[in-house]
Length: 366
Image (cartoon, rainbow, N blue to C red; front, side):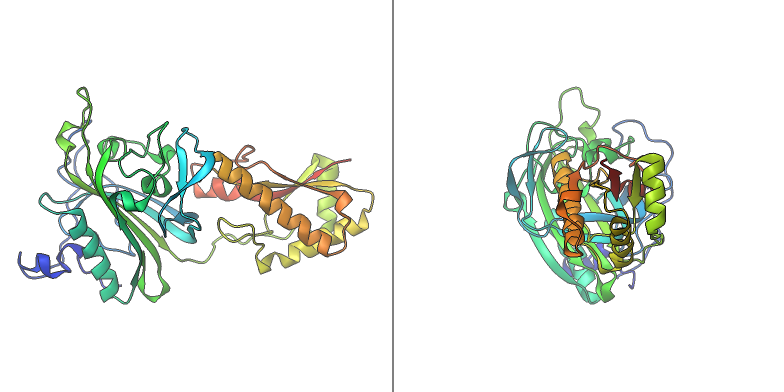
């Protein structure tokens, strides 16, 4: 995609001078807590899928080579009796847009004198000019959930920011005053990037009032943006099919076996067609060991709330059991279970670890 600076892509900004492409600001020295940075955070990089808004400073960027994320694509609605890990009432779209690929989260401090509407319109125009489109937009309370609480809030309501930036990813002085303080005047847009390159979510807001003892007083009223891009990419890791004989050996030796080649659509319990070879081997094993009963256990990473992951893992286990029953395996031999994020095999702090934790396991029952 042609790298046109978003900040000068609409007529409102053209009066400031001709459209020019400039290099990113030089890296800044270590930042004191609560200080306004003089330049980009050391080591932070823009995503290739979407240029930054003109004059913005990059406070932080975090990228996963291949990950999944559920993006807001409609007004958030209260999920009855559901809370997240910080006891916030859970608000989500009816059917979030589940996408996977290279996920990059970037936090920006925007130039003074700009408005949230101006910035969002700039991003939208840049994407549309390149052949993309706007999928959804909202502002303030019409977005649903909380439009004012910080990403690390507790005992309140979740909002767009909680979907886009999980609280356990927040770290460092560069984003302390952006993601951990209350907000005002939020505006959001979801964009379809051109040529099937992926999706982008842009959330813009003003830093709200802070407490008397806060380090972030200099940030009050400043306009900031959280930009999340998902660049579609082929999965780098090829999932190997476990043979029927290896399943039996694994159950006899360890009492369980992980089946990574049973794949699901992101945030759904639909088994992907490429899982067929693994299901065939699983059916072959169960037919060859007619006395064996198993638990079919779904596992997830920690990229959503506890209740959400527990329900998703349960539904995925049920989908596998349904496929086995359809192949003639007795339901009396199969018990679906979902444990969500409760039994990780690796740290969820990296994509490699999260990929290892997303799995279906067989556990020997007798």
